[in-house]
Image (cartoon, rainbow, N blue to C red):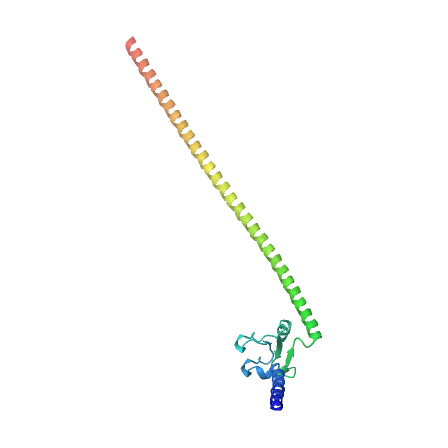
Length: 192
């Protein structure tokens, strides 16, 4: 009986080892989950097929594979098959280089974005300064127009007052002259 149990245990373990080894290959990946030709896919062990990351470019997939994951290549590179990230130190070194390159590109992109943002802020400040100067010029012109209108109105008032005084003086002179003529006429008539 012990021999039967030992034999069945060994048979079970013998069958389990190839099954585990096959679990790292294409056998556990459903055919509908394989990446299309020209793309790769990160396959994470222990995650259901519907929750796996989407197919992407092979360089991105190789750079972002986690420790419990692997990269699956599409049909045109089917000979490469499944690559386990824990198997090859060269792969990790290459991945570190790609990560460093990606970080440098992100840093450069951030620097360019900061420079662009600063340029945009300078342009916006310049436009605001120009607009403020335009508003100030318009205010000064309105004030000058108001002053000119006030001066013209004052000049018109002075001219009207001068004409009125002149007309009054002319009337007074006419009245005096008429009175003088009448008095002279009276005196002449009185002398006769």
